[in-house]
Amino acid sequence: MKFSVFTASTPDWTPQQAVSELSAQGWHGIEWRVTDQADAREPGFWAGNKATWPMTGLEDSLPEIARLTSEAGLEYSGLGGYARCDDHDGVERVLAATAALGARQVRVNVLPLGNSTMGGQEPSGLSYPELFDATREHYEWVAGRAAHHGVKALVELHHGTVTASASSARRLLEGLDPNHVGVIHDLGNLLIEGWESPLPALELLGPYLAHVHVKNARWVRADERDEAGAAVWVNEWAPLTEGQGSVLAYFKALAQVGYDAWVTVEDFSTDLPLTERTAGNLDFLRRAAALAGLTVNASLPAGSTSKG
Image (cartoon, rainbow, N blue to C red; front, side, top):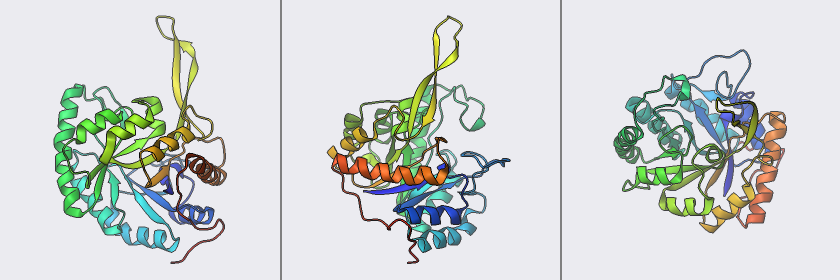
């Protein structure tokens, strides 16, 4: 098993700072965020993120992405793409970029639910069956293009989309080649929508379990009540050690199904400063992995940076 960080969760760092900090802390790899984003006065996870590579001009950025990653001694756990499966031009570009970098796998987003405002877009109003069928049709095309480039396209389990659960993702990909399509199982997202007990969910995914994202969340009671007078609960991101999901129990389930690939952290909590947060997360992941009986690959010693 290897540990990496998705740069959506490192908005204060430039790409150079990101690779230097993560390498010095002893992480194995990095998962670069790739998308065109809005500007912001202050760096944020979703706007003004300094560690994001723009989709516009991505091909021209590939040599610099490769240089920074390699010189820091880091590997790619994949690319954190935002191209949606119905954007065939965008998907083709991120698949080609993944192949060119040797990053092996990249997230290709599925369609949002008909009542979703994800990404600031207006709700489509389409029914779930319509959206699911359309996503399947697009993903059949994605699978073919991923095979052409020799990489894997990843479906993320994400609230507000047609694949919030492992069950829905397995149904979406059933019959497609698991060498070229797979699923990102995400502990934190599932606490918001799509929760299924981890062990049977991982078993259900079988050969489609390709990647793991770890973050944590919790539900808190809001001050207001709804129109019927009932309590209102809202979700918020939490530190890995403070959310409702047990990372240790999750790792034990991963161990039971024999998962030994990448675990990528995307911690959107802000309780601690970024450097302290990432370093503390790595220490915690190592402890949890050891207790779960998982074998973690050797990594760079903290405080050192490889130039290989």
